[in-house]
Amino acid sequence: MHPKAKSLGQGALTVALCATLVNAFAEGDVKRGEYLAKAAGCVGCHTEEKKDAVPFAGGRALKTPFGTFYGPNITPHPQAGIGRWTEADFMRAMREGKRPDGRNYFPAFPYPSFTNITDRDLRDLWAYLRALPPNARANQEHDLWFIFGWRFLVTFWKWFFFTPGPFTNIQGLTDIANRGAYLVQALGHCGECHTPRNFLGGPRSSRFLAGGKGPDGKGTPNLTPTGLKKRRPAAQRTCAGLFKAPTFGFRAGCCNRSRRR
Ligand code: HEC
Ligand code: HEC
Image (cartoon, rainbow, N blue to C red; front, side, top):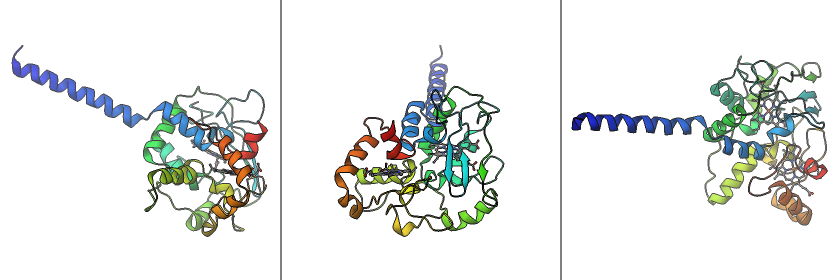
Protein backbone atom coordinates (compact mmCIF):
# COMPACT_ATOMS: atom_id res chain seq x y z
CA MET A 1 0.00 0.00 0.00
CA HIS A 2 1.16 3.54 -0.65
CA PRO A 3 2.50 4.94 2.65
CA LYS A 4 0.19 7.93 2.42
CA ALA A 5 -2.85 5.74 1.83
CA LYS A 6 -1.83 3.64 4.81
CA SER A 7 -1.59 6.59 7.15
CA LEU A 8 -4.92 7.87 5.82
CA GLY A 9 -6.39 4.49 6.56
CA GLN A 10 -5.01 4.56 10.10
CA GLY A 11 -6.29 8.07 10.54
CA ALA A 12 -9.76 6.98 9.53
CA LEU A 13 -9.58 4.05 11.94
CA THR A 14 -8.53 6.31 14.79
CA VAL A 15 -11.38 8.70 14.01
CA ALA A 16 -13.82 5.79 13.93
CA LEU A 17 -12.50 4.47 17.25
CA CYS A 18 -12.70 7.87 18.88
CA ALA A 19 -16.24 8.31 17.58
CA THR A 20 -17.21 4.99 19.17
CA LEU A 21 -15.65 6.01 22.48
CA VAL A 22 -17.29 9.43 22.47
CA ASN A 23 -20.56 7.72 21.68
CA ALA A 24 -20.13 5.33 24.57
CA PHE A 25 -19.78 8.31 26.91
CA ALA A 26 -22.54 10.30 25.27
CA GLU A 27 -24.92 7.37 25.59
CA GLY A 28 -24.47 6.86 29.30
CA ASP A 29 -23.46 3.91 31.36
CA VAL A 30 -26.21 1.43 32.32
CA LYS A 31 -24.42 0.01 35.39
CA ARG A 32 -23.69 3.43 36.79
CA GLY A 33 -27.26 4.40 36.03
CA GLU A 34 -28.50 1.49 38.10
CA TYR A 35 -26.43 2.64 41.06
CA LEU A 36 -27.72 6.20 40.68
CA ALA A 37 -31.32 5.00 40.46
CA LYS A 38 -30.81 3.15 43.74
CA ALA A 39 -29.31 6.21 45.38
CA ALA A 40 -32.33 8.23 44.25
CA GLY A 41 -34.93 5.64 45.24
CA CYS A 42 -36.66 5.83 41.85
CA VAL A 43 -38.12 2.35 42.17
CA GLY A 44 -40.02 3.20 45.36
CA CYS A 45 -42.41 5.69 43.77
CA HIS A 46 -42.56 3.96 40.39
CA THR A 47 -43.54 0.47 41.55
CA GLU A 48 -46.85 -0.79 42.91
CA GLU A 49 -46.89 -1.74 46.56
CA LYS A 50 -47.78 -5.40 46.23
CA LYS A 51 -46.04 -8.72 45.94
CA ASP A 52 -44.52 -9.47 42.50
CA ALA A 53 -45.00 -5.89 41.33
CA VAL A 54 -42.88 -5.16 38.24
CA PRO A 55 -40.18 -2.62 39.14
CA PHE A 56 -40.60 0.76 37.41
CA ALA A 57 -43.94 -0.23 35.82
CA GLY A 58 -45.73 2.37 37.96
CA GLY A 59 -48.73 2.33 40.27
CA ARG A 60 -47.39 3.29 43.69
CA ALA A 61 -50.01 5.46 45.41
CA LEU A 62 -48.50 8.55 47.03
CA LYS A 63 -51.02 10.03 49.44
CA THR A 64 -50.41 13.72 50.08
CA PRO A 65 -52.45 16.62 51.51
CA PHE A 66 -53.23 17.57 47.87
CA GLY A 67 -54.62 14.18 46.91
CA THR A 68 -53.21 10.87 45.72
CA PHE A 69 -50.53 10.74 43.03
CA TYR A 70 -49.66 7.55 41.20
CA GLY A 71 -46.07 7.05 40.12
CA PRO A 72 -46.20 6.45 36.34
CA ASN A 73 -44.73 3.58 34.31
CA ILE A 74 -41.18 4.59 33.34
CA THR A 75 -40.18 1.39 31.51
CA PRO A 76 -39.42 1.78 27.77
CA HIS A 77 -42.86 0.52 26.68
CA PRO A 78 -43.90 2.71 23.72
CA GLN A 79 -47.52 3.26 24.85
CA ALA A 80 -47.66 2.49 28.57
CA GLY A 81 -44.21 3.81 29.48
CA ILE A 82 -41.70 6.32 28.13
CA GLY A 83 -40.49 4.24 25.18
CA ARG A 84 -41.11 7.03 22.68
CA TRP A 85 -39.15 9.58 24.65
CA THR A 86 -35.83 11.02 23.52
CA GLU A 87 -32.96 11.60 25.90
CA ALA A 88 -33.76 15.31 25.65
CA ASP A 89 -37.33 14.65 26.87
CA PHE A 90 -35.89 12.87 29.89
CA MET A 91 -33.38 15.63 30.62
CA ARG A 92 -36.17 18.25 30.45
CA ALA A 93 -38.41 16.22 32.79
CA MET A 94 -35.69 15.85 35.40
CA ARG A 95 -34.06 19.27 35.05
CA GLU A 96 -37.10 21.49 34.42
CA GLY A 97 -40.04 19.44 35.64
CA LYS A 98 -41.67 19.61 32.21
CA ARG A 99 -43.46 16.96 30.20
CA PRO A 100 -42.57 16.38 26.55
CA ASP A 101 -45.68 18.47 25.62
CA GLY A 102 -44.29 21.36 27.69
CA ARG A 103 -46.78 21.13 30.58
CA ASN A 104 -45.60 21.01 34.18
CA TYR A 105 -45.08 18.00 36.33
CA PHE A 106 -46.41 18.16 39.86
CA PRO A 107 -43.62 18.47 42.41
CA ALA A 108 -44.76 15.17 43.97
CA PHE A 109 -42.18 14.01 41.42
CA PRO A 110 -39.17 15.36 43.33
CA TYR A 111 -37.66 17.23 40.40
CA PRO A 112 -37.02 20.28 42.63
CA SER A 113 -34.18 18.07 43.97
CA PHE A 114 -33.47 16.04 40.83
CA THR A 115 -32.81 19.27 38.92
CA ASN A 116 -29.51 19.25 40.83
CA ILE A 117 -28.38 15.97 39.21
CA THR A 118 -25.44 16.50 36.83
CA ASP A 119 -25.78 15.98 33.06
CA ARG A 120 -23.55 12.94 33.14
CA ASP A 121 -25.57 11.27 35.90
CA LEU A 122 -28.83 12.06 34.08
CA ARG A 123 -27.45 10.42 30.95
CA ASP A 124 -26.50 7.30 32.91
CA LEU A 125 -29.94 7.18 34.54
CA TRP A 126 -31.51 7.45 31.10
CA ALA A 127 -29.32 4.62 29.76
CA TYR A 128 -30.44 2.45 32.69
CA LEU A 129 -34.15 3.18 32.19
CA ARG A 130 -33.77 2.36 28.47
CA ALA A 131 -32.30 -1.00 29.35
CA LEU A 132 -35.28 -2.08 31.49
CA PRO A 133 -37.73 -4.61 30.02
CA PRO A 134 -40.73 -2.72 28.58
CA ASN A 135 -43.90 -3.33 30.58
CA ALA A 136 -47.47 -2.68 29.41
CA ARG A 137 -48.97 -1.74 32.79
CA ALA A 138 -51.28 1.22 32.14
CA ASN A 139 -50.96 4.44 34.17
CA GLN A 140 -53.64 5.65 36.55
CA GLU A 141 -54.92 9.21 36.67
CA HIS A 142 -53.87 11.11 39.79
CA ASP A 143 -56.73 11.62 42.19
CA LEU A 144 -56.27 15.23 43.30
CA TRP A 145 -58.36 17.77 45.12
CA PHE A 146 -60.07 20.44 43.05
CA ILE A 147 -57.59 23.02 41.67
CA PHE A 148 -54.56 21.12 42.90
CA GLY A 149 -55.00 19.02 39.77
CA TRP A 150 -54.38 22.00 37.49
CA ARG A 151 -50.94 21.66 36.01
CA PHE A 152 -50.66 25.31 34.96
CA LEU A 153 -50.88 26.40 38.60
CA VAL A 154 -47.57 24.64 39.13
CA THR A 155 -46.03 27.46 37.05
CA PHE A 156 -46.68 29.86 39.96
CA TRP A 157 -45.38 27.35 42.45
CA LYS A 158 -42.22 27.06 40.39
CA TRP A 159 -41.72 30.85 40.37
CA PHE A 160 -41.51 30.82 44.12
CA PHE A 161 -39.94 27.53 44.98
CA PHE A 162 -38.04 26.07 42.03
CA THR A 163 -34.46 26.85 41.02
CA PRO A 164 -33.40 24.64 38.11
CA GLY A 165 -29.79 23.69 37.48
CA PRO A 166 -27.17 21.10 38.38
CA PHE A 167 -25.38 20.96 41.73
CA THR A 168 -22.13 22.86 41.89
CA ASN A 169 -19.50 22.22 44.54
CA ILE A 170 -19.90 24.27 47.69
CA GLN A 171 -16.80 26.32 48.32
CA GLY A 172 -14.91 25.52 51.46
CA LEU A 173 -16.12 21.92 51.65
CA THR A 174 -13.82 18.95 51.11
CA ASP A 175 -14.40 16.67 48.11
CA ILE A 176 -16.01 14.07 50.35
CA ALA A 177 -18.33 16.61 51.96
CA ASN A 178 -19.29 17.88 48.51
CA ARG A 179 -20.00 14.34 47.37
CA GLY A 180 -22.24 13.98 50.43
CA ALA A 181 -23.95 17.29 49.73
CA TYR A 182 -24.63 16.13 46.16
CA LEU A 183 -26.10 12.82 47.36
CA VAL A 184 -28.30 14.58 49.91
CA GLN A 185 -29.47 17.48 47.75
CA ALA A 186 -29.72 15.91 44.31
CA LEU A 187 -30.08 12.12 44.25
CA GLY A 188 -31.20 11.35 47.81
CA HIS A 189 -33.69 14.29 47.75
CA CYS A 190 -33.59 14.18 51.56
CA GLY A 191 -34.91 17.74 51.77
CA GLU A 192 -38.21 16.74 50.15
CA CYS A 193 -39.25 15.13 53.43
CA HIS A 194 -36.81 16.50 55.99
CA THR A 195 -37.24 20.23 55.24
CA PRO A 196 -40.37 21.89 56.64
CA ARG A 197 -42.85 23.32 54.11
CA ASN A 198 -45.13 26.35 54.16
CA PHE A 199 -48.90 26.17 53.50
CA LEU A 200 -48.31 26.19 49.71
CA GLY A 201 -46.14 23.13 49.99
CA GLY A 202 -43.00 25.17 49.31
CA PRO A 203 -39.84 24.16 51.16
CA ARG A 204 -38.64 26.67 53.75
CA SER A 205 -35.08 26.74 52.51
CA SER A 206 -33.75 28.65 55.53
CA ARG A 207 -34.63 25.55 57.56
CA PHE A 208 -33.06 23.00 55.20
CA LEU A 209 -33.25 19.48 56.73
CA ALA A 210 -34.51 20.84 60.07
CA GLY A 211 -37.37 18.31 60.14
CA GLY A 212 -40.59 18.21 58.15
CA LYS A 213 -43.09 15.66 56.97
CA GLY A 214 -43.07 12.64 54.71
CA PRO A 215 -45.62 12.52 51.86
CA ASP A 216 -48.09 10.74 54.15
CA GLY A 217 -47.80 13.46 56.80
CA LYS A 218 -45.58 11.45 59.12
CA GLY A 219 -43.10 13.68 60.95
CA THR A 220 -39.45 13.47 59.92
CA PRO A 221 -36.56 14.21 62.27
CA ASN A 222 -34.20 17.14 62.17
CA LEU A 223 -31.04 16.05 60.30
CA THR A 224 -28.98 19.14 61.03
CA PRO A 225 -26.12 18.70 63.53
CA THR A 226 -28.34 20.00 66.36
CA GLY A 227 -30.96 17.39 65.60
CA LEU A 228 -28.57 14.54 65.01
CA LYS A 229 -26.76 15.17 68.27
CA LYS A 230 -29.97 14.43 70.13
CA ARG A 231 -30.71 11.17 68.35
CA ARG A 232 -27.33 9.94 67.41
CA PRO A 233 -27.46 6.16 68.14
CA ALA A 234 -30.80 5.58 66.39
CA ALA A 235 -29.96 7.88 63.51
CA GLN A 236 -26.63 6.20 63.00
CA ARG A 237 -28.27 2.79 62.88
CA THR A 238 -30.68 4.01 60.25
CA CYS A 239 -28.04 5.74 58.17
CA ALA A 240 -25.92 2.60 58.17
CA GLY A 241 -28.93 0.73 56.83
CA LEU A 242 -29.75 3.49 54.39
CA PHE A 243 -26.44 3.52 52.63
CA LYS A 244 -25.31 -0.04 52.20
CA ALA A 245 -21.97 -0.15 50.45
CA PRO A 246 -21.05 -0.50 47.64
CA THR A 247 -24.43 0.38 46.07
CA PHE A 248 -26.38 1.72 48.97
CA GLY A 249 -29.89 0.50 49.38
CA PHE A 250 -31.76 3.75 49.84
CA ARG A 251 -35.46 3.48 49.12
CA ALA A 252 -38.04 6.20 48.71
CA GLY A 253 -40.02 6.56 51.88
CA CYS A 254 -36.63 6.26 53.43
CA CYS A 255 -36.05 4.78 56.78
CA ASN A 256 -39.59 3.84 57.64
CA ARG A 257 -39.79 1.66 54.56
CA SER A 258 -36.34 0.17 54.76
CA ARG A 259 -37.21 -0.85 58.28
CA ARG A 260 -40.45 -2.50 57.27
CA ARG A 261 -38.84 -4.66 54.57
C1 HEC B 1 -41.29 10.63 45.76
C2 HEC B 1 -41.73 9.85 44.64
C3 HEC B 1 -40.89 9.80 43.37
C4 HEC B 1 -39.56 9.46 43.26
C5 HEC B 1 -38.57 9.14 44.36
C6 HEC B 1 -39.27 9.49 41.84
N1 HEC B 1 -40.39 9.81 41.13
FE1 HEC B 1 -40.54 9.93 39.11
N2 HEC B 1 -42.45 10.64 39.30
C7 HEC B 1 -43.19 10.66 40.47
C8 HEC B 1 -44.53 11.16 40.19
C9 HEC B 1 -45.66 11.33 41.20
C10 HEC B 1 -44.59 11.43 38.80
C11 HEC B 1 -45.77 12.00 38.00
C12 HEC B 1 -45.79 13.52 38.10
C13 HEC B 1 -46.92 14.17 37.32
O1 HEC B 1 -47.76 13.48 36.77
O2 HEC B 1 -46.96 15.41 37.27
C14 HEC B 1 -43.26 11.08 38.27
C15 HEC B 1 -42.91 11.18 36.94
C16 HEC B 1 -41.70 10.74 36.42
C17 HEC B 1 -41.37 10.76 35.01
C18 HEC B 1 -42.29 11.21 33.88
C19 HEC B 1 -43.10 10.04 33.39
C20 HEC B 1 -44.17 10.38 32.40
O3 HEC B 1 -44.83 9.44 31.91
O4 HEC B 1 -44.41 11.54 32.08
C21 HEC B 1 -40.10 10.27 34.89
C22 HEC B 1 -39.31 10.08 33.60
C23 HEC B 1 -39.64 9.95 36.22
N3 HEC B 1 -40.63 10.24 37.13
C24 HEC B 1 -38.38 9.43 36.48
C25 HEC B 1 -37.90 9.23 37.78
C26 HEC B 1 -36.54 8.85 38.05
C27 HEC B 1 -35.46 8.56 37.01
C28 HEC B 1 -36.43 8.81 39.41
C29 HEC B 1 -35.18 8.54 40.23
C30 HEC B 1 -34.04 9.37 39.89
C31 HEC B 1 -37.73 9.15 39.96
N4 HEC B 1 -38.59 9.41 38.94
C32 HEC B 1 -38.03 9.19 41.31
C33 HEC B 1 -42.72 10.34 41.72
C34 HEC B 1 -41.41 10.00 42.02
C1 HEC C 1 -39.96 10.20 51.19
C2 HEC C 1 -39.62 10.87 52.41
C3 HEC C 1 -38.21 10.79 52.93
C4 HEC C 1 -37.03 11.01 52.24
C5 HEC C 1 -36.85 11.35 50.77
C6 HEC C 1 -35.97 10.85 53.20
N1 HEC C 1 -36.48 10.56 54.44
FE1 HEC C 1 -35.41 10.20 56.15
N2 HEC C 1 -37.14 9.88 57.18
C7 HEC C 1 -38.41 9.94 56.63
C8 HEC C 1 -39.39 9.63 57.68
C9 HEC C 1 -40.90 9.62 57.48
C10 HEC C 1 -38.64 9.39 58.86
C11 HEC C 1 -39.17 9.05 60.26
C12 HEC C 1 -39.90 7.77 60.22
C13 HEC C 1 -39.22 6.67 60.92
O1 HEC C 1 -38.93 6.83 62.10
O2 HEC C 1 -38.97 5.62 60.30
C14 HEC C 1 -37.23 9.54 58.50
C15 HEC C 1 -36.17 9.37 59.40
C16 HEC C 1 -34.83 9.59 59.09
C17 HEC C 1 -33.72 9.44 60.04
C18 HEC C 1 -33.82 9.14 61.51
C19 HEC C 1 -34.06 7.70 61.77
C20 HEC C 1 -34.07 7.37 63.24
O3 HEC C 1 -34.40 6.24 63.52
O4 HEC C 1 -33.77 8.22 64.06
C21 HEC C 1 -32.57 9.72 59.35
C22 HEC C 1 -31.14 9.71 59.89
C23 HEC C 1 -32.95 10.01 57.96
N3 HEC C 1 -34.32 9.92 57.85
C24 HEC C 1 -32.06 10.34 56.98
C25 HEC C 1 -32.42 10.58 55.65
C26 HEC C 1 -31.45 10.88 54.60
C27 HEC C 1 -29.94 10.99 54.79
C28 HEC C 1 -32.17 11.07 53.46
C29 HEC C 1 -31.65 11.33 52.06
C30 HEC C 1 -30.70 10.37 51.55
C31 HEC C 1 -33.58 10.87 53.80
N4 HEC C 1 -33.69 10.59 55.13
C32 HEC C 1 -34.62 11.00 52.89
C33 HEC C 1 -38.76 10.26 55.33
C34 HEC C 1 -37.85 10.52 54.32
